[in-house]
Image (cartoon, rainbow, N blue to C red):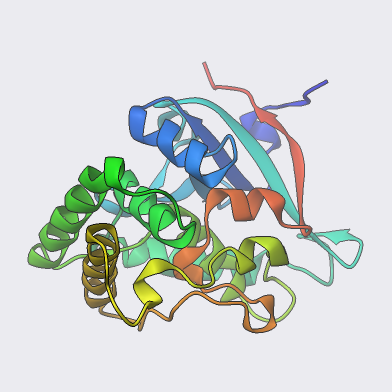
Amino acid sequence: MERDVAAGDLKPCDILLYHGYSTVSQLIQWFDGSEYSHSAVYDGSMVVEAVRKGVIRDTVQESMAHTEYVDVYRLRKNGGFIGSGSLPYDPVLTVAGRYAAEGGRFSYEEVVLLALLCTTRRLPLPFLRWAFDRAASLLNSMVEGGKEPMVCSELVYRCFSEAGDGYRPGIRGADARSRIAVPHLKAEKTTEADRAVDAFMSRYAAAKRSRAVKQPGIAGFEPEPDFVTPKDLKRSPDLVKIGRLVRPS
């Protein structure tokens, strides 16, 4: 039976995974192979998440407003949960606070994550050409507005991986391996779909001004943050599902 988690029972650094009901949310869930389409980090009082207007702090109630349900996951390493003596909260909260403070320079649209999934999962693309076109257009708008794309699950992963040794959630090898030999790595772009993927990835890399976008791969089974998805977080052996968040009244 699903355990209910009240907002008051959330702990700092809890990871929130959201089941959305919009069309794009459902496509993300379908192609990513999980029930989640969005993710965020709780900082002890507010939710830190990447949304259209940037990386923001929001109330739990507002963050849940456009989702069907939210599940709570917690980092556990070496037998102990985060917050214990060996894994204090502060390093993760410092990174999350830094991203929130710089939030105005970022932007996130669900269709960008959908396009990344179409790229890295080697999916059949013709009927989703609209996703690449829409995502490319949004990337252009972000750049013109002086913003940089920051995918929701990328933000969550960076909050932990940039906190120092011992905080990085492991990503299962099967998920990392699925990112090999994606279409945009081909020497020749022989199909319209390949060319669409290549054009999108080129724009995405150019839009990420503050850091280079590395090609996804499996070196050491260490994922690139840019390509981490909600499913990757769900399947991490270091993240334990605590229960389902009760919607505040």
